[in-house]
Image 1 (cartoon, rainbow, N blue to C red):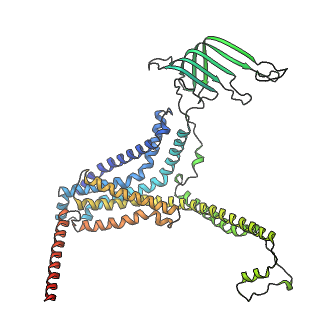
Image 2: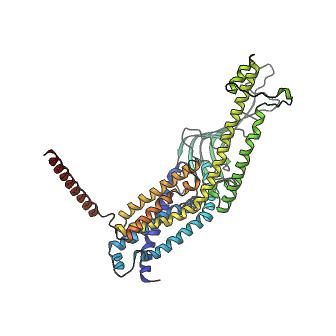
Image 3: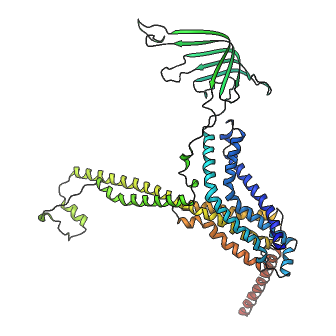
Length: 505
């Protein structure tokens, strides 16, 4: 490797890794803001939250690679042009394409890495990340008692406290509660109503070390219970044989109520329930599923006509004398109507009913087949994206290196602005192409490759301009062109006025 290659590569890797980290951080912040309501009050431990961020950080790498390559290549050649190092290379006989050769190799390697990552790592990270996110979203909130409000998230209990005093962090006795009311609801479905109520003047609430059980230590209260069996009738019954229910009251000075927290926390769902999604499949699986779905769609569409025969009646007459005669006068429909002299309401109603049935059958099958075809398009689109995201890295390199050589500005000022504009353009074109492909408005390969098809010619054009030392973004070029245009306009106006005067003479 020559010194010039080391110089260019050394100035490339710093902005590349910095941009990659910044983009991943931005996408993770977007994730947190979008699901912030699902994360709060779920009592997530650091390990679970770290695993979630790790999975989604992996998912953002294919999206962040094109922007990182674009910005770092633009800054590299922008710095070389700003400090006249690029000019010195050209004066020494080193062309721009030769200077770009090391980064071109790096762009190809990063594109290959992006394809491998999309095909091998992304399906695994999608499965792990979205299954964990689903479990977090469906987990119950942590225990949070509020003063004067019944808390009903504990299965079988309704709890209200009049006053809650937060315990110090170093205290192991738990929060101090005053004026407790605890209703115990039956959970076996054999009884109804509140059969037991606990009243206490004060108490404390704390959990064990494993956070699997919640303990209420109650002081100075009473436990009221109502019992009934098949031979005992509730006090609400009426009649001469009605009996009052059996009540029992237990007073206590120190009573511990232990409640299981099994329903709280995260319950891991079987990951096989999420494997059907196209984002969880690699290239071989996508190809197999696409072929299966297309064969199923073809088989279903061919069976529609045959199955529709059950919705209408028809018969053939074998009698030679009953053969249909050729209609020679007017339209055949009018001829048949003219021959129908006696109205038949029953036949008309049956025909209308059968027409409505066949219409409903056709409409439902069109909807069903459309959804099947959309599933085929989604899997085809994800198959193409395994390649398009890799190729976009190379396209962004062409644009970034060429723009850097043209504008000759380094740092994080103008290069960042230009990179964001092109990245947003790439992102919007990708979203629009995906939308049109999923809705069947365009052929799936056209929608998948729309962004690269638009930006690749732009990259080639900028490369051609950079090789010829184009001053495409210099202000002076456009000022001079504008002045020349005004001079030509003045000359044209002068010639026009002179010709008008000669014609008048």
